[in-house]
Image (cartoon, rainbow, N blue to C red; front, side, top):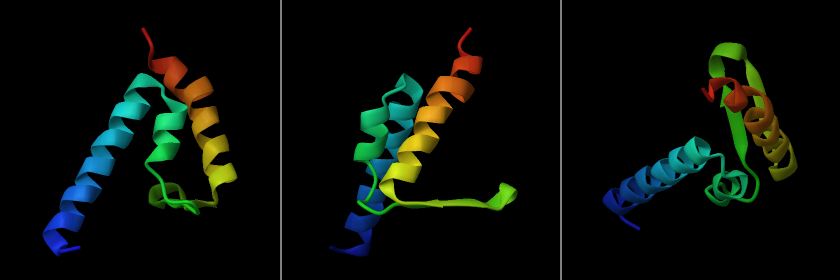
Length: 71
């Protein structure tokens, strides 16, 4: 895969993730990730690794955080 193709694919996945988060689609979010995802929330110094951990993060996010933004 060329650098240009890789950049396009990463941008596409980023758009898919943003759309899934925006619509509250947990399965859609998880579908954009690699099998063993690693997240680092730099300003908070928090890290999470693995599908089960990231799933729990998004479940919490949709149940608690996103729910606060719904008007």
